[in-house]
Amino acid sequence: MNTTKSMEAILEFFVLCDPKKRPVRLNRLPSVPKDALCYSALLPSPLPSQLLIFGLGDWSGLSGGSTVEVKLEGSGTKEHRLGTLTPESRCFLWESDQNPDTSIMLQEGKLHICMSVKGQVNINSTNRKKEHGKRKRIKEEEENVCPNSGHVKVPAQKQKNSSPKSPAPAKQLAHSKAFLAAPAVPTARWGQALCPVNSETVILIGGQGTRMQFCKDSMWKLNTDRSTWTPAEALADGLSPEARTGHTATFDPENNRIYVFGGSKNRKWFNDVHILDIEAWRWRSVEAQGKVPPLSYHTCSLFRGELFVFGGVFPRPNPEPDGCSNLLYIFDPQHEIWYQPIVLGKTPSSRSGHSACLLNRELYVFGGWDTPVCYNDLYVLDLGLMEFSLVEVTGSSPSPRCWHSAAPVSDFQFLIHGGYDGNQALSDTYLFNTVTKTWTCLDHSSLPKSPRAGHSMLSLPAVKEEQSEECNPRELLIFGGGDNEGNFYSDAVRLDLTDLLP
Image (cartoon, rainbow, N blue to C red; front, side, top):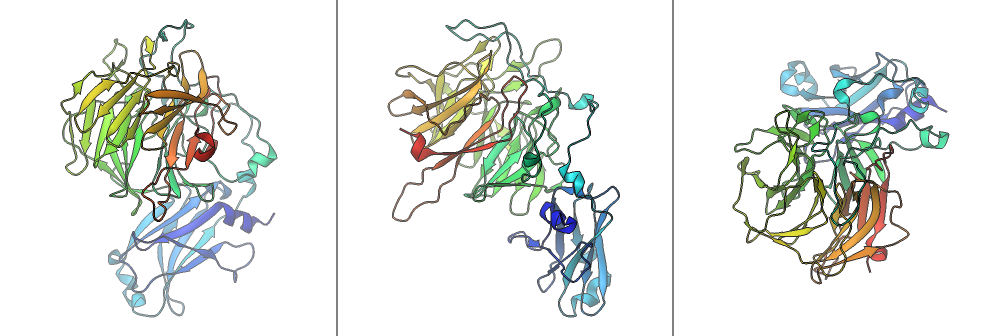
């Protein structure tokens, strides 16, 4: 295998000149020796005041101590060093006003940004298995033992003496050669957050996987058109979100932002809000006013520009166990403030690991758990009246469960899939019709057969057709999760709703 070609397939280099435009990809120079790795791209004129330079992909093909030198080249032999990329520092921001030596270059002809790899390219390191032997377990990365654990009782059903817990540590699996040669995918995980940002892109954030460790490859982009994953990194104004599980990530299409809230890591709990600007690709930590408790395994829905956070589990002082919430909190991004609205009607009991689906102005809350009960009740919150009510369901309901997934599939229907019932992970799928108030069990060959909990399911945005007011989703995406028996998943399952729905 040609080393340089393999390296090109693993690492890509970019420069962002304008946050409102796509980054410029650097191409490998054909004029350099075959064993060298040099890249170049023409920069726009006049040169922007700031350049964001970064590399994406698998850096394990670079040997220890390797660097990527970045230079600005002008006419003739003039050049100016901008900085260095390394496996530990994969991006940097260059500002022209801090580099007066470039002033002459900026006035003369075309400018190119050039990168050259300094060090040995070890392509085999990206394809071989990790060395055998046990890896030392890092105490601070141990599994976030699910709070409020205890005997979980399913109403009207006899249950084993067990408690909802994070899936057990997975056994080390032997990888085939075909797997090693496959394109990059996120590591297997559960408790992550997944959200679509347009008709072609889905963002994955956080999660926890094998050996009870939090995922180091915390953020990925999925191109749904090509079905390819790309590792994602972003700059940060202040702090970027720590590794976590049980958090939420909610996309605001009006402002092109993703809001990340809450979650937990070991005994550390979060009530922070982080905003990812997907145009500038930059994190910003919010110093919000108002009070909201640290929450994990809650739900978060965007309605009229505000975030509606319901339920979840929160820490209590020792020696008391952690407890669940049935409170509603609203975050106003414009004024960066939390507040609690006055809620009327019959409020659901405290719970976490439940689901919430927003259809028009109605928020449907299903299932969840709070020691010692696992639920299968369904509530609806009218966001216009701010009133909760219990939905009187016609016919049979799904069995009680938590850590399932849910997604709207039309203006009056939503799906739930999988979950954990206190004994085992589930693999069934149900459709709820808000008009007829009925549940329908779906059985189709395209549905995943592996039981899973803590996974993500979302409706992929559809493109609105001409001469039609409807823009219903046509596909579902299911990612990740675990079976509570030691197996975690990294598969992305696409489901065609035209075949699935009755």
